[in-house]
Length: 328
Image (cartoon, rainbow, N blue to C red; front, side, top):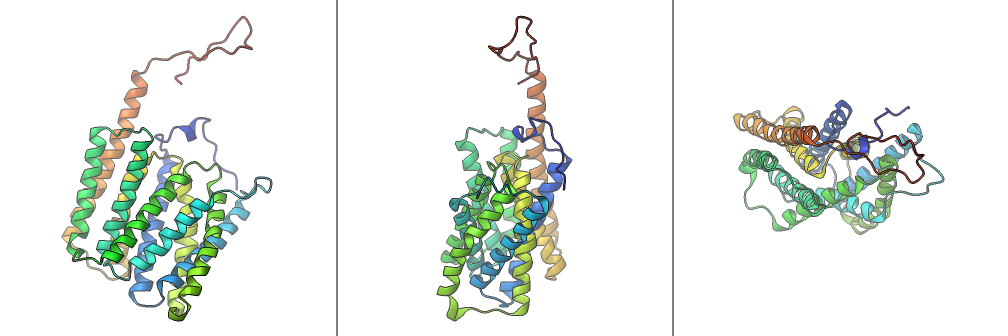
C-alpha cells in the first residue's frame, strides 16, 4: 500500500493537522474507547480473569501488528529491532494494571483516575520540553476536565486505594508510552516489536496466577478483539496520529475517550442516556475544541506576523547566490 505524500516539513510541524491527521486521531480515540467497553464486558461478567485477559490481549495484538507490518511492507530487515524494552515494559504495565484495577473500581472512578493520570503525564512532559500553552488553551483543557468530572462524579464513592493506585499507574504508563512513540521513524514496526517484548512478562504473570485463571469462550473473544482491533491496530493508528499532534493537543483530545466509551456503554451495555451525559459531552468536546482551535489560530497569526528571513549561505555556494526567503 502506497503511503500518502506530505510536504517535506509536514512531520516537523505537528500543529498542521489536516484531514488525514483528524481521521487518524478519531479512529485511535474510538479504538481506545472500545478497549474500555470490551474490558467492562469481559471482567464485569466474570468471563475471564485480569491476567488471562491481558495475556490474550497482548498476544493477539502482537500477531495482528505482525500481519500489518508484513502487509504494508514496513519492516526493514537491515534495520533490526525497533522500539525499546522500556516502551515494551510501559505497554505491559499499562495493560496489566488496567485490567487488575477494574476488579475493585467502578467504571466511572476508573475512567477518571486513568485519564487524569494520562493528562498529567503528557502535560508534564510538554512543560518539561519547553512547550508553554496559552491561557486560552489552559482554559479549554480545564473546561474539558470539569466536564469529565461532572460525567463520572456520581460513580465516585470510596474507591479502593489499591485499585486507584493501579489505575493511576496504568495512566502514567500509557502517557509515557505515547510520548516515547512520537520519536519513532517507523511507528508500526516499533509498536509491533514492543508488543512482542511484553510476551515474556505476561508469561511470567500468567504462570504465577495459573491456579486462579478463569477463561470462558466469551471472555477469550472479548480479549482477542481488544488485542487485535482496539489495541494492536489502535496503537498503530495512534502513533501515526501523534506525528501530527503536539503533546498538549494529544493530551487534550484524549479527554474525549471517556465520553466515547460512555456512548459505547449505552449502545453495547444497555446503559441509560441521561441529561448529565449529554451536558458533560457538550462541555468536554467544547473544551477540546476551544483548546485546539486556540492553538491553531495562534499558530496562524504567528506565521502571518513573522517576517521572512534568509537562510545562512552555504560555503559551497557560487558567487551568484540564490537566497531562500521562505520562512524557516
